[in-house]
Image: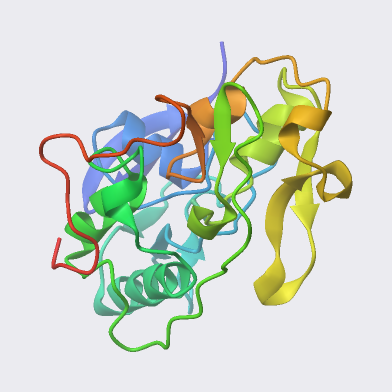
Length: 233
Ligand code: FES
């Protein structure tokens, strides 16, 4: 039987497996911490989205809950002015590079970004940052999936699942800085590769960057309950 430790989450005591990351310990106990790039099955946390900050008593700076393990007696606060500010800024940074075209996105209504905007009480359209949309070509060549880099948040889940968890190993990050995006090897169209059609990449994508085809192209009209981008969530 694995060792357990006692820790405090917003002053409530919980017992969890020693070494468990704060994020998973919190979610297992019904306490939500915003997150996008965390994937429990990954051996090492990716730590890209910077949304999962929490305060840990005794630490000068907030820590990433997806990569910080729980320790005996640790006291964690999931909210503070500082943490809220960091999360909102991280979210705005993501959205400043996003195409914000929810109306034509197959994930409209079930997108993690829309959920986060609601949770963080912010608009999907950044207020403080200039928008620099990616404007990369959409890859519609595959019979089953569409890759739209302009909606990608670089969470790395598709790259991980494609290379290390049952996929065909064809997706990776390409370019650097603002131009960074996910693409198949040599930027060839997806259809050029012996993709096993596992569709795992579309399954793990939390946004509308990799979606299953719903017809000749992406969904032409939004599902009911769909949300306008740029409106207060
Ligand atoms: S979930 Fe922790 S950095 Fe993304």
